[in-house]
Length: 222
Image 1 (cartoon, rainbow, N blue to C red):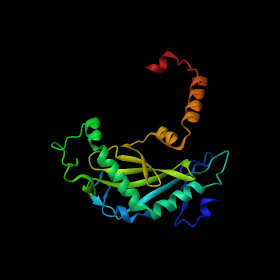
Image 2: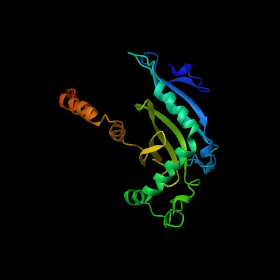
Image 3: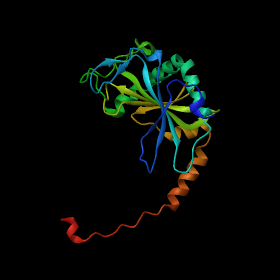
Image 4: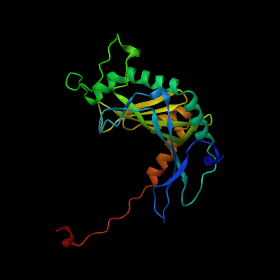
């Protein structure tokens, strides 16, 4: 199914390329009530979101091809819409479970920075992350499993405004959670294509030939 015929509200094509090299991305926005009141725009000011999140469905066309099968993305959109609270709770649980790792890996010190959450055994799963994170955008990854795309979430983040927080989910499951970027190899591992993708990567690496560098005249270095 062509995604433009899917009845997803306000869906549009936005061109990020040039006339010669068009790069058309399918985009829209959605209001996820599950995230109402969470942090937004921390880079500029502390402000709560109403749950509005940008959705990036991927490239609609390229020079050589035009996608026609968007069923995994459409299925993921519908799942997101109807299971947003379950997905939110899964992301928050994963963040609580991994927060000690975040503190050690990125040297977060709550005593120095009040924007670092203090999660105790008493607060545990009931910890309120509303003042600390909020979803900014969701990318529908072209990789899928059971005909449902993976979603890559990008969050504004009070303790790391430069990099933010990122997560990968598939339906209600959290596949990865990290600072700013996520690990595509975890998707390959989850959907059973890891060996195939590793072989493709090794072949490209083996056959890679760097372009020869043209020597510049000595006077261009001055």
